[in-house]
View 1 (cartoon, rainbow, N blue to C red):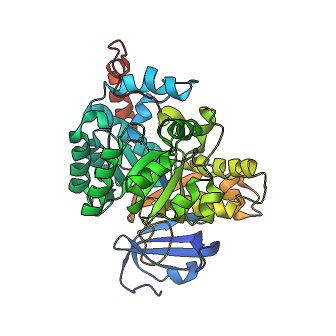
View 2 (view 1 turned 30 degrees about the vertical axis):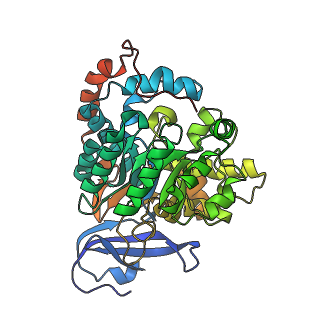
View 3 (view 1 turned 90 degrees about the vertical axis):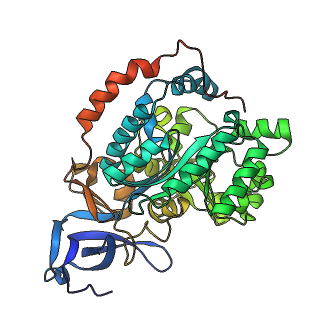
Length: 452
């Protein structure tokens, strides 16, 4: 597409641009420029051609790679406030002894400050969009609107809350859908099949159909959950989703390391759009014996997006690390060094992650008509030189700290490593003052019981 001669909003020039071809294969256009107008990419052209174009703002990106912004397909952003408080514990103790008692103390202010710190961390790491599944989500939506990120948000609920939990999740989704100038999309967010009963899951599926909403849920997070569900109910968690109608609507499944062979035809036959989010660092920390079956899911056409989960389990919100770990763990799990390749990992990090959160036609590629969610990566450091294979350099040598500039909807949120929309020292100070009350477990309460 030839750019308009009228003044562009932004031109990024002199960079190498990561692009997808008609078969969705990863490629690179060198010495290129990206023209942004009205929050979308208008054209990817040669740098020389861009020299004569007028623009309100120009970014000289010589020596840098322009990539689609990364998408964190499943996280609990406010849980950065709990980073490091529940270490070296099995899953059941992690939930019951620490995390769920602490979450009983959460206030809206705690959620707001945690979300603000999380967004700062993600912007600095090249994440332009995140899918969040947590409590007091009005506060998270307000932070997203203010800081300029894109987000897919859902108010989590348990059946123990009664019907009002599900109703609150619906009310949140309807109120915030299309918020922040279209940067916010929403979902219904039942927690998991082991905390939300079949009646509530079926009601959620009906609400999703009625209101045209997707669903974001934890399911078959690990093999123990699948085995316990089979022993107690005779069905896997994935089969629970099927029998309650959740596979007839658009659903994003968090983790799925317990997905069994018997689940694959169930997922393949789903009539809704199904995606899975994988967050490998947490699986390693919890010593889970299996990981998300990326290869098997890909074979049946299900996109697998990259994620971090919350920083209470993962310790960071670094999707770049998730990209590298996914590639490495897949090689080890499959016993095949040819899988997952660097280009395949980049595809999961970009277009597949966008599809996972329902934004496959909006972001995930740098191409005309796509929203201008772009990050610029500096490969001049000694750890990324020399470059023999650019895809391998990006996945296995570069780090999130090599992201120099982060752009969402054509707005620069970080320029040359300087955050422009969040005051991190102020957030850290206020959050620190709230820690004693937040971390108090002397009350002996917990918001839920982990018993799969």
